[in-house]
Image (cartoon, rainbow, N blue to C red; front, side, top):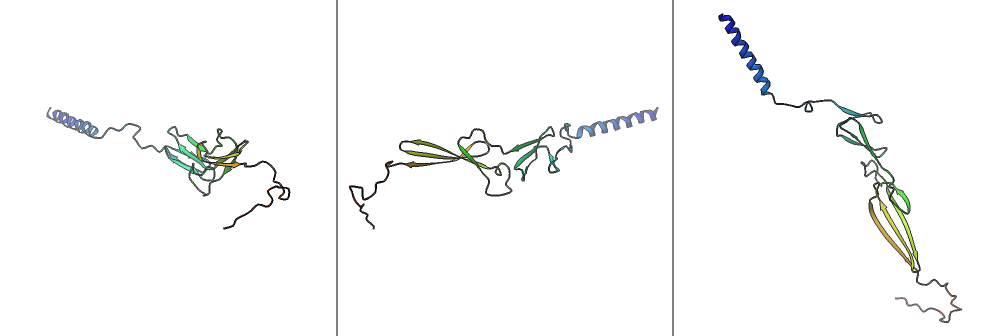
Amino acid sequence: MESSALTSVVMLVLLAILAGGEAALPYRSSSYRYSQQFCMDTQTGRQLYVGEVFTRLEQCMRVQCLGTLQLWEDSCLVPSSIKGDCRSIPPTESNLEYPRCCPLYECKTYESSAEGTLEQTNTYDHNGSLRKSHLTEVIVINKKPRLDPEDSAMGAIRRNYV
C-alpha cells in the first residue's frame, strides 16, 4: 500500500510539473508562429515575403506580396484626364525606383483671341497630377502689313543708340 501511495504522489508531482511548465510558456497564437510563406515573382525569380515590395527596374513596375500570397503590380499608365497636345518625357536618370521611373507628360493647349495667342504648357505625372504649369502669351500689336519706308508718309525711322 505504501508503494501505491508513493506512486500516486510521484504521479501527482509529475502532472503538476507538466501542467505548470506548459503554463509557464507564453501564449502565442497560430499566426505568431514562424511560417515560411512567400510569393514568387515569376518574371525575376525573386521570393518576396508578405508585405515586401520591390521595383522591376527594366519595366518600371512596383511588385508587392499580399497577405493572400498574391502579387500586386503597379505600373506607369498614361493618365486619362490630361488634355491638349501631349508628349511623354522620360526621366533624366536611369534605374529609379517606382514611381520616380515613370515618365512625365507635357501637354500644350492654345487659345487665340484678337489680342494674341495664349500657350499653356502643363506637366503631369503618371497619376494625372499637375506637377508644373507655364503660360506664354504672344501679343499682336499691329496686324497691318508693314509699309515700305518709301511709301510711308513718315519717311525713315529715327533710331537712337546709346
